[in-house]
Structures are given as C-alpha cells and as structure tokens.
Length: 169
Image 1: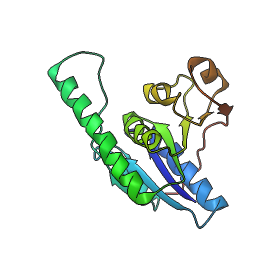
Image 2: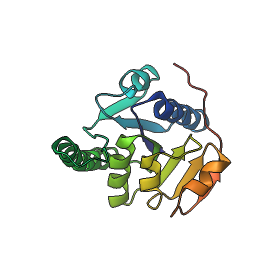
Image 3: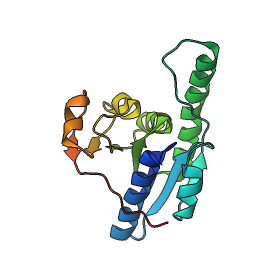
Image 4: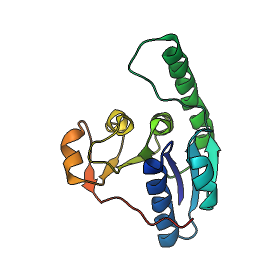
C-alpha cells in the first residue's frame, strides 16, 4: 500500500501523522509512506528523524483580513495545489491522509482532483479550518474527541478513534 500523509506546521498535526505512519508500517511493513509539508514547519525536523521521506510545497495559511499579503498567500497556496498534484502523480498513493494545518488543504484538494481517497484525522475537540474545509471531500474523518462530531458539517463518514500518540523518534 502507498500512503501519503500531510499535516504540518505544529506538533499537533505532525506527531499524529507520524504515529499513523508508524502504525501503518507496523501492520503492513511493505507499505510505502511519504509526507508532504512546507519548508517552514516542524515536519522538516520530525518527519525525516522518524525515517520518512518528506516532499515540500509552498503553501500558506490565509488570514481573515483582505490585504496584499493575504492575496499573495492565496496565490501561492493555489499554486501549491498544482505542486501537490505533481507529487501525487509521481508517487501514486492509494490513499491520502491529512492531519490538519494549512498544508493539508492544498494536498487534499489535489488528491480530490485526482480522485485519490482522502482520510482526515482531527485531534482536537474544536476542529481546525483545514478539516472543516476538506470535510465534504474526505471519504472518512477520524476524530480524537466525540465532541468534535457536532462541529463538522457536510462530512460523509465520521469515526471517533482517539488521537494516535506513539511516535518513535
């Protein structure tokens, strides 16, 4: 099985993604796993240290204000969807797993456009913007907390799994 994971910026997104990757490798040792992150987040240290390949794209978070900087970030993020599509076409994953952070939106949008199944994992009781934005496109959403269910609309299938935490680094 080929799995691509994306979640970055903070440890709250990166550590669960690594724990999911480790569990997949434990269950299916022949699996190929790759991550997509940004050049700026914690994933740059944590993912390679955990033994996984990391590709980088230039996505940015968008502020709620309308200003020139935000318009530039939006343009770069739209471009990042194309960068992610190129990586996905080369890697050919069976599934894409997003664990949040703005990088997750660009990668999951690309996966959706390429008809690659998407699973989202949200560790927080209050789902982040990335998971809310991608909920309708996801084939399944895994939640860390039962309370998060009522805060996600337009989801196809939601399962409360808890948050994976075992990370070997």
